[in-house]
Length: 204
Image 1 (cartoon, rainbow, N blue to C red):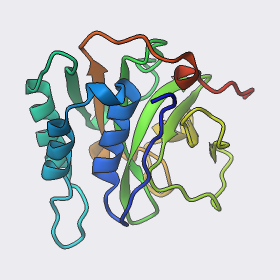
Image 2 (image 1 turned 45 degrees about the vertical axis):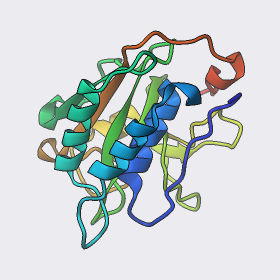
Image 3 (image 1 turned 180 degrees about the vertical axis):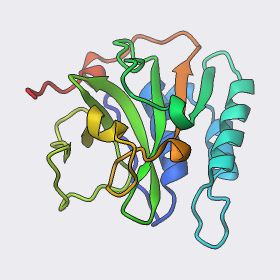
């Protein structure tokens, strides 16, 4: 697989499993991801029958299962971070070896929440992949990325993301609403095609 191809949602509600699958794609090559892991992602998520969406409890259960699952090629750690501890100024996603990423819970609009994949941070921006892109929306604090940005389709200003309010898209919300899963690859990383790990260069 020469280039990373991240997934968009196939329904209105499957942002949770899609964001998790995209995290796995970021961290691993295709031949390193066990089919059992993908099965478990969908087994645990989309646990709210009425809406078909994913609860925080389900994401915690999935993270716990992934911490215990291990093969020769696949091993990760999932750290659930909640509340006031979710703040994006610690520079924990700047690794150049693509050894970590995260699942971020953000506002979708005024009334709904949404899971996206936080890939890395650079120059005061979080570079992400949103499985439900809304290209007609615009903001001074976040912007959609061009198609040639090596996988990222969204960047969000970290100060905007950190603002403790819940009224606008892509904010992490008030302290009591915040949720993040930090995912780190523990198994040894294979040599990868240079093109698939090149990060976008932008002047901010």
